Length: 190
Image (cartoon, rainbow, N blue to C red):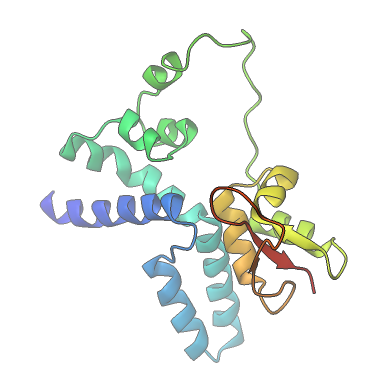
């Protein structure tokens, strides 16, 4: 059992890093990118590209988190509330086997007795289509793409970074920004 604890911890660490740091690149992505650079067989290239897409969308990372998080949390006495406060969605926690009723009750009374429809997963391909639909010269921000597509901040950020040089230019700080906080990064559609 002790041999399984370390991989579980690594999975949880990578998933939390991906949530907390949109520029985080998992060791799995780095490994796949290295393999892709060295691969010459077209079939293997296609397989590696799909694995890389899955990793960048976070589906593989999220699925691994769902598989390992509960056992890791039980062994370290970390609860759903702590993970939720770090940004893990209640739906992901529920899939991982956590009791999320406590999280729902702490939010106060619901505005409706109806259950919300389950949120559909927005993929990086969906985000890419949205980006490519914009005319050349359009300035795009992560927040407006999140609002428009319904994708997560991490999915939009990873997709934009993957399209630099192909569909968008390197980001610049919003020249119209004034006031507190950092300026939003703008990506120009090319």
